[in-house]
Image (cartoon, rainbow over all chains, first blue to last red):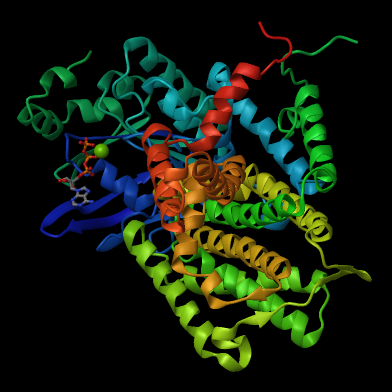
Length: 261
Length: 350
Ligand SMILES: Nc1ncnc2c1ncn2[C@@H]1O[C@H](COP(=O)(O)OP(=O)(O)OP(=O)(O)O)[C@@H](O)[C@H]1O
Ligand SMILES: [Mg+2]
């Protein structure tokens, strides 16, 4: 059984159909890329998986649990974490606090124990700080750990957002365009982190990405959406050779973007 | 032993301490000693002013937890003080309850009211939330006036003096220490809450509610929790107020008072506990300063005699707040933070 099953998903916004009968599976331990031209419905699909949008039909099933009948915080508790296309960090909090917030579900301090900040609450704070520092080291953002994220450059913020999602110790990580707007070097760094997340932490990755170089390099499987419809699903080389996919991208005038290799 | 002139931490525990340099500990120690000997230095009026500052501080810290930290505006804060004050007075006067029952009970009843207001307000933001909380405040005021049998209506209620294990605190000086201890506990508790899990969730809800929920924060729970916590602080401040004044009246808890609490946290600094303290002191003390200044001018310049009245005071006060919003939107707290950077390693500046 696949870890994440997208079953016949349809999502409408008024007259717009953002997703139409989309169905595919994400296997445990894969890096699974989700691609498609602008407006194809990729972000909408992420929003359905994380419970922000309710589909009009179909469902997303994660490890046997139907996701889109529960609220986003319960979905997070099931082991689903994500980043956003437009960075959604907590601007006024430091990098450390953003990541500690990512550990919200692994902590139990409430108002009373927090107010005293002694014994259990203090130990919990220190223990989770250790895990956060591990992630900070892993993403190589030690230098900025105490800075408010709002003051950091875009590329670093993107990294911090991955860190915040990782802090939740998820079993699947959804990345919405993790390398958008980055230079070659930054892109390579992120690609390496994504591979490390898969190999060292064993976390499944579902990734929306426009950078075909990255997709072809690191993805185990690729799903292609166009106008809310699934047009291809397979290995990178299968998808690359698929005439429908080529047409979808050519139709958009994006052939350069497509023919990277 | 080496003198540590810079913050350098060897463990994460050290890193998250509130006072992490010897100098900050020394300053804090001096400040506390100063507060304890204050009644021996100043006159009764000054002690009375400090008592009012303590009450305002607890109320402002509470409002800042809701508005500054969680991003939910409230124009009904005074109503929660009223609920605390009346609860405390009824328990003390009618049932002869000691302070260690009345103070937490005032807080808890106000917190329960906070939950009742918070739940229907879950979907409201900004101006709509301001309107809803303001309506609640007006409702409470109305109930206090009409429910004569319980609240004494327009005549208000009389609060007996605090009895601390046989010691009756019937002067401003004696009740001062009582208020100081409660205020200190409430400030430290708030400081601790905002630097642990609940406080981070509050700020996350304020900065990005959707991202917070996707990271596992139960939005509904935390929004209501912020209302409950904020109202608890207001309720405790209300009981403190009743003990200091000895008499409470619906007119002590109007919308104008709610606006004043809002002014405290804006002038002090939204999202800062220290700022709430600064703001509370500022709003309580400044009108007195203006009054003294006006009287001095009247005495010095005979032509000005009789020109001053309370309306002038309110106008000058309003002007001061406007100037603040324009020139220092971060509030007193950001002025303090700048000063602190200058003094960070004092006396070892480099
Ligand atoms: N909240 C919304 N309300 C109305 N329409 C929406 C909403 N969110 C998305 N849409 C529409 O749904 C369609 C799919 O949008 P979506 O953001 O999922 O595309 P995408 O594949 O992520 O595109 P991009 O590559 O530009 O990020 C678009 O036509 C968009 O305008
Ligand atoms: Mg998108």
